[in-house]
Length: 360
Image (tube, rainbow, N blue to C red; front, side, top):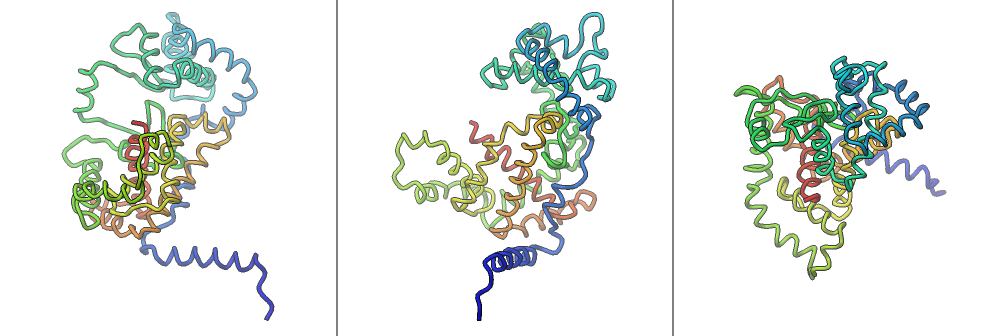
């Protein structure tokens, strides 16, 4: 019998893998691809493809204005909130926000984006240094404007806000979040914490119950105590100079965080995938207008990362933990399909748990 062509054999293996994966998932699990490719939500007119097209056409003018404003504090204030003659008017990002971010005011965002990028580079690519520069540009007062909102700096004000009930919406760093392709629509930090019985509070409690306190057979405190043994098995002869190997350190962080949450020690290939939650950190601070300006390269990268992260959950057969968590929520808060909840929780673990720890 003649052997089958290689292409047919390869296609058959791929189909078989997809079928087996679908069979292994719970019936109400769903498809992460459908979640990631769902219709976009809350796209402002100044972030439309029409706006992007004109932004490219006028690139030299936008670039000149933005670079100068990103180096001169007073001009930065002017394009942010307007000048004395038109504060909050049509020539500032604040005026655009107050007007609902219409298309005819998109030019404010074109130059503001380049100004912010210039200021970030001029301040050593440090977001903290950027915010301090902006605060100084606004006269070191109690408040200043960044993105689409008002910021504050004092410990007293920040502490008061953090301890208060907050009416939230999908936004990151006072910039409208690109959902559902860059961020999950109902990410925990997007949910309001108002009232004693909030969705935010219910999900936090469910995460602790299913993944930290009692989930995966042991409490997370027990799994934390087991980490030295796990690390030693991977890193048998540690040396101080090994800490200069950024990939090695980041892989170790990924394995530790995943083990603490799920009790599963990641394989090398899976840890390399999870490193993406740190190496792609820049993508999350960019608004949709910028992502479209670079032809959604960053969003495509993040969508792939989120898809592969869910695939890791499926590989280690952890789906039932998310199904149980989803079932424990009030019916109005349950995710349909369940993979949406998995994506939200894994985004938080990857973004804060892995990305934040690696950055520290």
